[in-house]
Image (cartoon, rainbow, N blue to C red; front, side, top):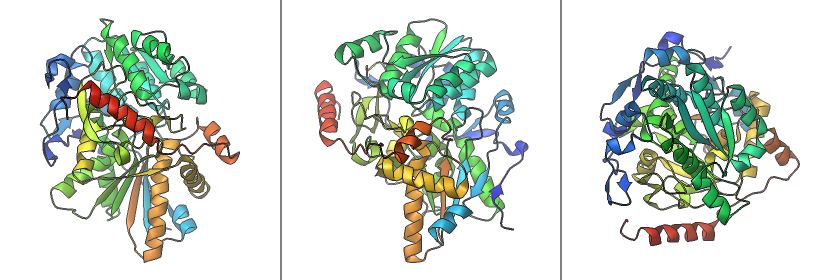
Length: 457
């Protein structure tokens, strides 16, 4: 019988996170203070983040030890299994071998606890009593609520309003873990009130929710802000995925030719691929391809410029260099709420800019078609977000069939879709809008950014 899943023992949970910063093709551009026009100093971030997380953010150490307290909680679901997609291969009649890393086995159902547990732990050690954050589809908010419950911390989550109403049971899940969940934009913060004054019917965005969560954190002494994607320390924590994956491929004497992952901010795909990209950048696996997949409705990597911008809509946090659609860009309410971010992780953006990674964009109906095929053949209902990666894998597998190539394709199935049934309903009822590339909207957003900071190229 062919081996369906490749599993590791609990003792094989990584003991260190991999920090890609020392291996980048060039130094990461610094954060910029828009008032002084100078690089931000690490101590300038202490009002927002825990000190240890700031240290990890700028660390030049290639390996960062994982605290035993964090590894102990990781044992609840890690190591996660690697599956061979025999059913999907058969349905596509492809010579390609398809593998997926299944992160949906965590208590919140996604990869997000890999960093939520770490962030909650470091904040607890430094005396923080409450954490604030934003969430799009609800996976990050669920993960932080879970982490705070593990460490007896209070938790406030600003959930993008479109997702708050599309996915009510994500809200309930967070509340079960004793988190306070607020639809964003809200009247709770100054940042939210200003946006509602301009647009009372605003569906919200991750940029807006970030503004509210930061606004809340910096106005309360016992509170710190946490982020579920984009920043360096979050991507660092997610490398447990790729480090496990390396061991699993070694077990079966395989190596991926192409790696796929969905990208909103970039944390899951970064954690999945960075340990492998280290080998690519060191010249050991030059032919390896890494493909970031995003929505056509929010085509940051495929249509946005690579330039400095704010990570939030209210411009409360420093300027970062990344692919961006403009900080005031509000995407259409696609069901992949976790991919509705106007920018991308600076590290991932640099890797795309230097050609180490590549990017593709798809419409949501073709994505759900691929998701349904995957469910029928593999049994797992994927979240809308990783379904974008599934679509890219299906296309590549069919190309392998056309060319007769036996490539190894690997993707990160970063979460389940059990709270996304309304999206599947809309797909089956043919009521799922195909929001395409909003060219004029993006042009206007970038023009406003250029007018705001004419000095910053």
